[in-house]
Length: 316
Image (cartoon, rainbow, N blue to C red; front, top):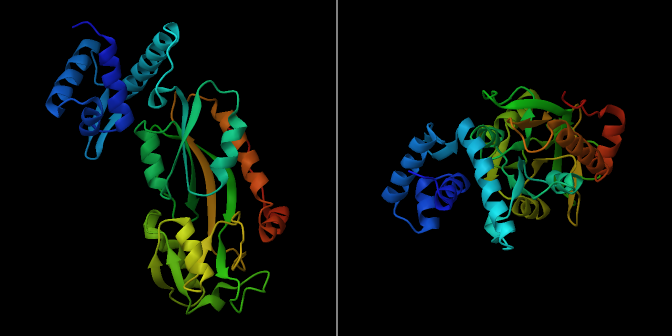
């Protein structure tokens, strides 16, 4: 069998969709037909392009190499013909993941000068981001691990610390009796209704429960909410409190305060696989610089950072 452009499009579609079923639908082919064609392509190339997983497919190391060449061929042919690539086919230089928040929005502008674009994917789960990097769905990701509740490393995924210590703050309604305090003791929040994100690792509760129990009480987890906007609305209207990123901005009806003794600490890491489309050292510097910029968004964190904050050196 001689490889043709349509075969390259098949390989790219399967990688982009992460599923043979979804790729078949996108290409308007039956699943058996696509599966058969993919098998013939793999036989022609002499090695599997994808690992078949319970949740879909992920490129093998060989598959990632073939994908890079396939995308280059298609993009080069489009340029030769003077064609504009469809939006979905425009070259993606870097697929970058991270936890929800402002950090990635500050990182991406620092990557100007890359050929192609940077595509961003967020997920509150470090385990999910690591799996996406390991499976080839992301090139790199910025992840957060709570001290004492670290997600185990995955083979083949490189990792470098960006911020060794980041305290978790607490978000309160502005009319809360403790909102006037510059720093709040966790023990003073016993009896509050807590809001957690169930998509975080450990269901969002394990580090919170451990810290609260060390402070002498069991937290009442009243709400499980996955999006930041809804969480802020629940806090603002007095329906609960939650742990918050220290870089989170305050707003009408809501304050974000440090906790005495920093009972919950995170570590911010950069993870990636090789080959990475951008130098990990350059990406690390971009993430570190962006993070430092964000430390001034909350006055309580600006003070904390001036006394305790630091970023780690770039990886070799």
